[in-house]
Length: 100
Image (cartoon, rainbow, N blue to C red):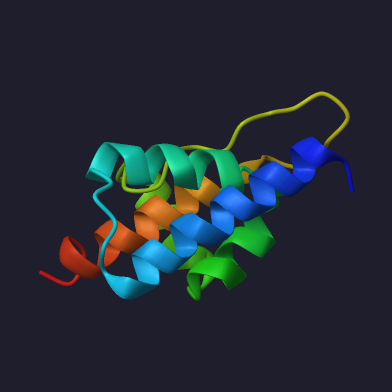
């Protein structure tokens, strides 16, 4: 592992320790930025449904209602693409918004 990789790994461990201990001073926007950086992973619609633990019909309804963003077309892929970090934000908001 390169020294830069080690530095990143150590900083992420320090940050995780602060979150676990409840001593993190990160704002909500900083947390969202961190999620985007560490969780930007491509998923198919099927994978996204499994990740969100919902049937495809519900997923499609949420997309049509604008709760879940429309998938993106990407060169080299036939299916639409969704990103894990965006779905994490949906999961976070879903606990507060979709249950009401």
